[in-house]
Image 1: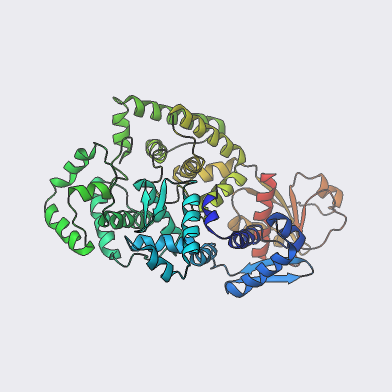
Image 2: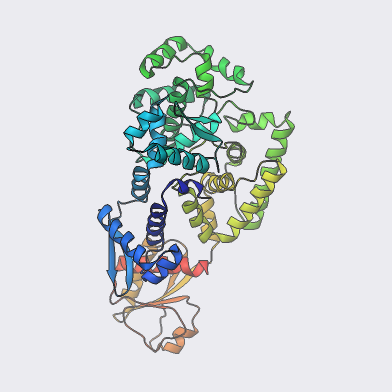
Length: 494
């Protein structure tokens, strides 16, 4: 679902899609093929390519008789593409401005963005139409503010800043980054919530958006469960002194009402801070019991089908359960322009297609059974959570794949072949079985009759037709490792 791309102009959407195709597929394209895929003329495509060449110093867009291809340094990531289109979008620029400036007049925005009144009203109408295809939010007129479902507003802005800025950048000049870090660390340690680099980075963005909206007077209707969380910090030594300190540092009085709003992401039914608390709740709470029972059965079935072990079952019960309830409360559980989770999930799907499909079907059944909306983006986020949080899942799945039998032959001597095997055993994964044939009158027929999946030799064998063959006379040893790993991926994915 790429609805937020509609906030870009048609030309911007086409150029963004063009870059995504070139970067993802990493091959030569003829103009005709690209024009067909982008539903545009070759003339428009040539103009786009010229524009992109002059815009992005990070990319080398090559042209030859082979067509069009993109090249870039290993240090360049996809972020540079999305940052550019966010920066160039008038719609997103206006939405961002309204985050930092409350109650702006129509006249002021027209002057600031160099808009006629007609263009201004057309822009607002377009923004509201596109935003409301996905979020219950809109820009109110005179004064201008982004309002609506406050949970949606906060998530939209947090996700926007997460995609709009580089990961290590701090986009909130009104708030000291260190003060936000210290506040989050204080409460997370208090509640026993695990702290990692990525968790802190995500929640700094998310909760600073919350602070900013609270400071401007926007609040979310609270559930009735805050008292049990409040008791955890009210008895802490020097807590009032700490809250006064953070209030001064952040410019927001951290009273009980503000703290409720600040941590509303966790203060909700069916969210648990620890596996123990979820398991304990499942003894008396029917919903928690049904959820954990289904998730346990899912893991039991996956373990049986794929001969897997799950060392952190209790943690996985909590992760899957909590993730299903974090609708618009966790960064990248949905996306605006930069669909980074799909890119990651597609890697999992291409390497482990059967497991991916079974997991997806289990999770769909879980969502239906627990009466969740079948939200494709939450489903995607849950799949990602299982793959990344299940300890040692990937090595177990990889070991299930058939080992590749590699026959090594050298024109020098058997000792050279053996040294190649020693080298490859060290640099390649344990998914390879290397061997050599000790036979003084070895023939091509012998090689073709062997059980080898691929043959490696330091000389050419044009007669060898029935086996995949890699000639190393033009390869370095490390290039051979790269070729074999690529062969393993292609062979086991076929």
